Image (cartoon, protein in one colour):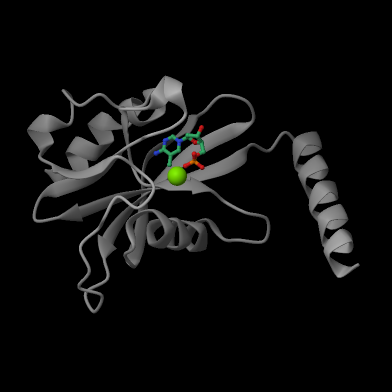
Length: 151
Ligand code: 9L3
Ligand code: MG
């Protein structure tokens, strides 16, 4: 019963956002360590399998963007991150979604190495590797801002 009430509320909120013309937010983490940026290689959908992206995903109803990013990094990489400032502009994705990237660092006390729990692989990229990496289209738009972050 309570679940149905919550589902109804969530559907109403989503409808109101669409009326207001607000895009659904997808957040991504620019995790930097020792001058390198962490990227992960997608395994799905088939159209994007093999391409690289910054870790992250959709912000759920009632979640702050930063909270969503911490949750996504645990789910996808098995690590805790400390979230910083936004990097670069919001980038429109298909449909009513935009991608927003935040600078991030691995939480010091954690000590775990990021692992590809839902992806094919993870890599630490140098600034020189950023332009020659096969990024998802939205992430590619952010390459100049990411290079600036590394330099
Ligand atoms: N997306 C693009 N670049 C990224 C991320 C984290 C996500 N760095 C796109 C891919 C999907 C959508 O956003 O179309 C939702 O992301 P996810 O839930 O598949 O990670
Ligand atoms: Mg994701």
